[in-house]
Length: 309
Image 1 (cartoon, rainbow, N blue to C red):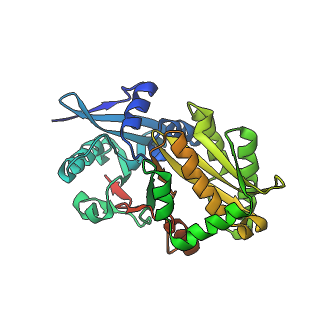
Image 2: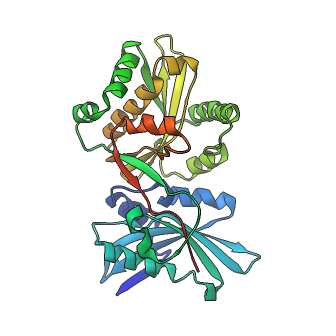
Image 3: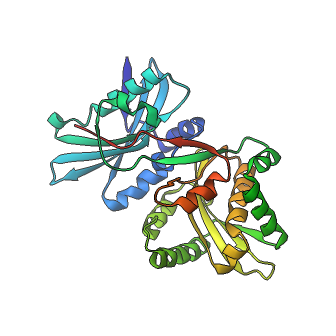
């Protein structure tokens, strides 16, 4: 019999189980849930267990509508705390839907941590939102193995950036983060796209246990000119690529290749086991998708988003 405990874990208890999970999504982290309070969401943190054994965590964001009805969203959850058979995963997803049913004046939007091939097994109403796909880099592998695995052209660009004398500046200060987000905001305006808002990054920074869990890596020329930068978020033993920018000189010097490789080197040294490349969408951003695929990570595509009434 599956049991669900609501909001029963302290933050240290949640963080400890979250770290044990290995691969985890940023949006299921305690810090992300706290950051969403600024947008009117209340994080509800569920522990799913059986016979006293923890099986999964799930962070559901909940909001009241007109003071009565509740809408809730589960994104990239549950966080599986160990290997489970598909039937057990489906049973857990079914169980955690129960508190948000129509007869309880509630509805749950759910984008489960479940592979796309199993979507039909959920028996839910699919929304038209696109399925989420990305890739994991296994940071437990030796650096020479990860480097050899890179696409040949990608690796050649990295070698060119290194020969050009680029160096990495690694920082977790608010000043460096604001510098990067300022360039990123300008890039969004110039290229007419929508990325992660600066306000959301600021809220996330304020919710972290450790400032170093939000990391900026800048590419510097031998003259100490910053020509590119990326933002990474650490959560549990995983990390996620969030934001990237490089200027004209950065593109010429292949700063993006240098920065992503430096992310691997830095995160591995800090004890991270997995790096999520932050999304791969060949339809909307084919150039970015091709670049990330050059890192030869373990690709995944999730089931999509559904409505549970």
